[in-house]
Length: 251
Image (cartoon, rainbow, N blue to C red; front, side):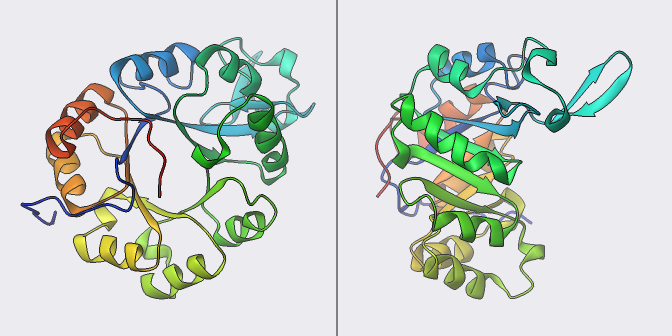
């Protein structure tokens, strides 16, 4: 049952991040340059994607990490860049076309991709304090947090996977300098947002597709939301935060 919140509680980030999930997925083909450009035009202040490493070491943006060629399905990790469909962009091409004036949330699908993601982002003059690297395994997140101190690290999980409980998980993340806890919107409530903030963690909430869910989570004080519907997200953001999404820095 969704907890009803009447008055907006403060977030740790002054202006929450409105992430366009896989670009403006509800409005254009997902994870394409067209979708990312459209998301920014619609008012998102953050973009989200998944990243994989090709057989010849290139970093590319795609959700499933599977390509079909000649009737066969193969992992991107086994395919060279030249054999990928043309709609799958490299990270370099993404920055060249889309620019750098936004928050960027990346679901890292290949642990060997971290170094290249950080290096390419830095070489593209992307502000690393707005680069949020997400992973579903907390040990991978903790390990890489110590290697790349200039970027943001996000523990992407579900409440049911925290066998130690949310308070101990938050304590672990704080101890290792992880920046944010990212859970499905159905896992969050006002108490858990407050708990995350108590441990100096940003509270990120994904799969926000309906206005009433977005409204409730902004009022809980979450720091970032992910949605396929950028138009709905921007409208609710404006109503609850009091202005359109901005590119301000997190605290």
